[in-house]
Length: 444
Image 1: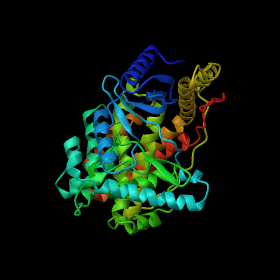
Image 2 (image 1 turned 180 degrees about the vertical axis):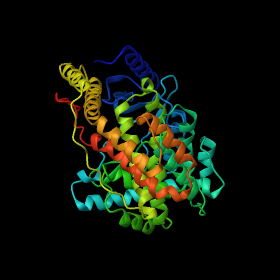
Image 3 (image 1 turned 30 degrees about the horizontal axis):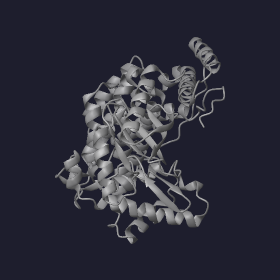
Image 4 (image 1 turned 135 degrees about the horizontal axis):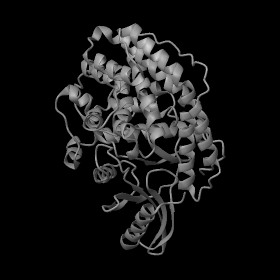
């Protein structure tokens, strides 16, 4: 599974641009991920120039084009944010060409607690610098700049919601419930809009030095508490450390006070951002770059949002007990496909990545096939018990429950949170069991 002709053509265009605009290219390698990206070693006046070229995602999202990110990247760099040097933007790819900065992510890998303390200080400083940029500069670059205090609160979320509403989508009662709850309960942002990273907390470091902030594709004007809420999610896989003390640190280093209640609320629309973005890809699989990964985003985001709503409203959620699997005819067929996949050799790192992701998707489908009959019985029974809806199968139930949720009064909130959270727990239980294909695949 080597790079296809389209990928090779893109790579040739990247190399041609670099040699024309920067200098001779000595080495080039495709990064092992679905998004087109390359590591390039070039020269400028005989000196090494390590580059990272990051292409467009190629789908309907993010809400703003890559050209917008290029403009934002330069604004942040000009404002003192530690952004990698931006060499330029290749319009025909499209792609950003930037300096490949030394460093690695995840403070958990830092050598000492002293290094982590210093890195947390620098992260707080970088976040404050972003929040202090004049929002009008972002507006001039293409960002919305809302005036209504409630719309400032949900400025970032509205961008993703626009993609959701304008694209194909599956019946999703959990998404419609969360959308309705947010609209009914959104608090106004009375302190006014600022520039926010949105997907905040992304940086690399070396020793005790934060060497670069990364990924500005979601930067927008909105409520700064979105960035603190984002740290709750990022801390799950790239350690930030105790967040309450980090908020204190941000304040002590010149940032405005952090409202913990607003952070808790903002974690709900933040969790839903990716869910809304990939809804069309889940409904139209041929356009999905990584269907299984998008499914994980959907389940994790909706489950997180429902859990936060339960916390904020005092609803107690019960753990889910996975039913025993059953033998099915097509489960065997999926095992056969998985066995065939394990015999295929990967020609390069990108192909290894593709093979790994396909193996994970097949493993999930096998688990789903063996649990599907029990899941459907449970789901139809739960919905009938809570709402009185009688459905013939899972799809019929989804359609009817979505309509019910859209028309329901707030008095139904507690019952629907429990019902929809239990629904999502079924899928999450299986996703959490997926470990990857049987055949070893190196992604180094």
